[in-house]
Length: 486
Image 1 (cartoon, rainbow, N blue to C red):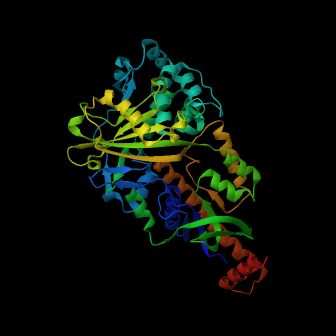
Image 2 (tube, rainbow, N blue to C red; image 1 turned 45 degrees about the vertical axis):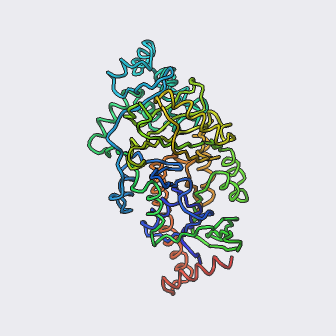
Image 3 (cartoon, one colour; image 1 turned 180 degrees about the vertical axis):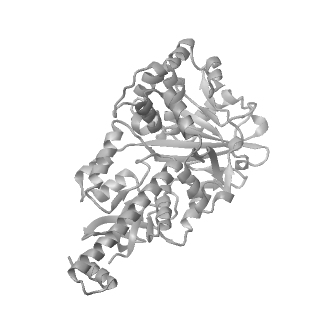
């Protein structure tokens, strides 16, 4: 007999999302988190001066109906904090900030690209379809729209937002929508046009939001679900198969414990999953151990508004690698969400390192702050030192979808088919954003609920065929007894 239908190991946003989705499917869930709090890297810090800072994820950029329903069903709509009505984005270009064009007319006049680069972009509809599952982001973008678009737009995005290296990142995995458009329509331009035409009536409006009190509000709301048995300080040590069940042994406060579950979901980093799975599938463990993570240092800086000459009339800016600095970008958080800073103050959240400069993780506070101010001061015309600085370091911030990552994930999926009842639900599969994690969690939860329903029918059929005179309840008990005594 199982103690729980599903045991979820790992209480970050992936684990919380799938546990929440499972209980909505009517499945009993227990959730183990090795640390003392839920949320993983997501954590909001409010200091005594009134600055509200995010340790990791800062917002949700949504265009998926699944996420909209998830937020509604979590009773979080009233707690949403919508992005301020600004659309301008900046890029560091030749030592100054220039706006990133989003419309064709602006692209034509933008100084970001040369005349040759603009003409190359216009030829995109006439470029023959190509590519393969091992193609890198750099190869894909250069092939479709030219090298300038790669260096001045895509590389800063991949390096700054995903902490990745476009020369190594797998295009199928990092740019799934764009690569699908090419495969389906033969052209990004035609694909985008057709996507807009075909999806105009059913598309979910795009919206960007955080929550009142920060992203921790999302975590607190999910973990407070009374149908989820959340266990903090519980570390999984070993997973074993017993009949059609999984037994997970672990520890909590130095005490051993074990739980038997019909199905187990591992929502932990790849290397942690590899350690638990190595006894069951050496190849699967090797695939997971091969996933690399990028280190990122987050430097929050608070200034008096009068100290900065720049209007800060946008989302922030990204930095291309040719600039030769360790910083990858800056979010103007108080422009996005004014409540992030006290009156008369601004909050700028800056990012260092990633795959571009992984050695930054070894820098001390003084060097990290100095590097950020060296970049910010001339770009924003800053006159004074920051009145507040906070640093958050992540040694393994984000998984790197490098190499033939698409092929690696197909192999992982094939291996999992040999381990029924075991699932991997983490940010190294299906995307790193909060939006992606919620979408993937709902899909996995629906699949698990279907498998559980089918297994119950199979169990009853087995027992009734073996003991046709006994009731359904007795049949279930006989089946569980036979499993436990295998």
